[in-house]
Image (tube, rainbow, N blue to C red; front, side):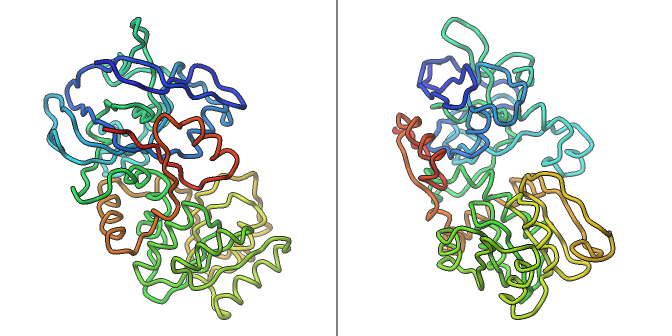
Length: 374
């Protein structure tokens, strides 16, 4: 079947996104084909297109990994969904490795290869997509949601309620899942506990909203007033702008914002090394550090004093939680008004992908979402 898709052929500083025609095959064993309704644009999409990560990507490739839509058809053996179901498409996993069998698909042993598809192959050694002259086209994260249809394994698919707004559901499978999931899986605060969220972007705000949903008190730390204003408006108990502060000043400001208490946990989304250490020092001994942000080298003078002080540090992948366990809950919280992520979204038509990407690179939007017309 011929469909429209944005095919990236070269990686460069100022990437071009043009819609072209490709062929998508029929679903095979265990596969699902989804007619797209919307897809989020994530910084990782931009990073791939600009070669920020210097990964050996299989090109040409259809980027995009925050898709949502309606199941159009399924292959033999599919049991999770049927044609007509509303779904979110999340991250890939093999289902066969030790981690997958232990119920931890987010740390699948094959995730790296399946995510960047170095070889550009599907599970059957072929390709989900081909050019009009039959050449293989790879798909980012085994998804490639910058296309009118997505074909992938049923393992990536999560069914969502029919009354969930599918246009904006896609981002629930990536950054929003990461921040909210880590509250549930790693920090696990009790009612009234303080949790520090370092970085007030999409991931940090999702941690804020889940933290409030479970009864925690949240202080959000950032250097941008606009982010802190959003955090305050959507439930933060305290905010701290640490721009220009030293490490010691930042620690004191955070503790003061918590009324002199120490936090039980830190959700670190900034990747800024001095800020990481400063926030860690505001966490009580034995507290939990969830490191999400990607930063540079970091060192400590002692494992027993200062920022570390008997704390548990976990490096986080996808919220350390499965899409099946978190996405339906996020849909429920959104409909209850407790997870207002729609405030972050700017909608664009699929045909406006270049503008959406350019705006994102220029910092003019927070979470762009491309919409596919019927």
